[in-house]
Image 1 (cartoon, helix red, strand yellow):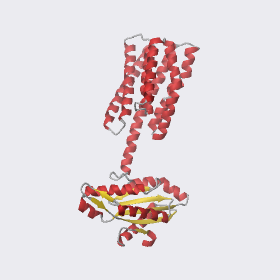
Image 2: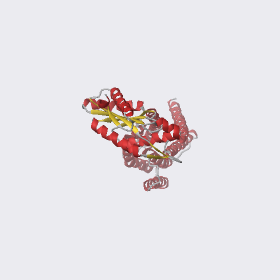
Image 3: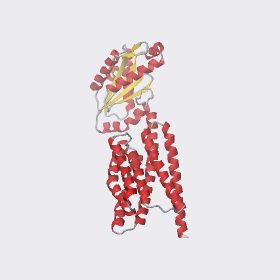
Image 4: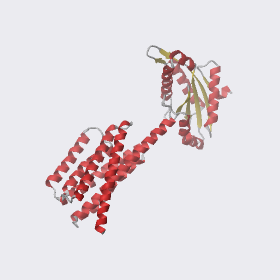
Length: 381
């Protein structure tokens, strides 16, 4: 009865793994139309396909009671490991490194099939994992840090699972020879690692999609600058830090002069080109720590943390002069433009709203005074 139950559990495991891999292959195929690196998807597709073939082979072996030497699954392990290494570390290009890795893994598989007995094959697998998996772990760990995605962290942890069993495998291969036990523990640990890699892949896809949707919600699609919601989101931490440090915060409000006339004269498509050109100018004259956003229409805002009025005034004047001299080429014409600016600065800012209002008032003072100029909030008052 117990033996029958255990056999049922094994078949259930095969069914679960094969179903999981089929689902993964469907997911990878559906992602081909998404904006994801196609080379990475192909590698994961190869990894999951090889995994499905391996699990199907094991299931058929047990169902039909086929006796196979351990050298066959061991040799197949090296091919699957190559696909896993390339997929999880992001080695997508055909470089000298990838070619050398491919040749080495194929050579290992052929040597196991041609020269090794079962014990030597399992020992070769254990030594391989002891030498290669720490290197893969280090590379995937660095990738997880750079991506800041929990899915990549799960993949990194998955690579530790097979490595943890290496000391036990080597002990039972060299000092207390038990090939069946070594094969079983290797089988279990590799299965757990495969499932974790699958979870890491799916998690990374979901998190990347969520982050992309978040960016779309926080950015203006035309200019690529933050929208008002994105500005408020980006200011949460920096503004609190500036308040604790008793630093100045400056705001520059920008508005294109007579933008309606530009739209009426040249068309809305040309107006979009003007907005994109102005956005590029704003980005080129601001620091990485500054926050540029489009408030809507032709109105833009620059928030400069740790900057006093004089510095904001200097930046606003430079941008104004650049825009005044800018010639934007069109298909059959060109456009010149001017812009008005309002500058406001406060010490120990608790809320950006009052500062935005002051800068906006200064902006409309610049409009009243003839446009194409910079006004400071204190002067406007």
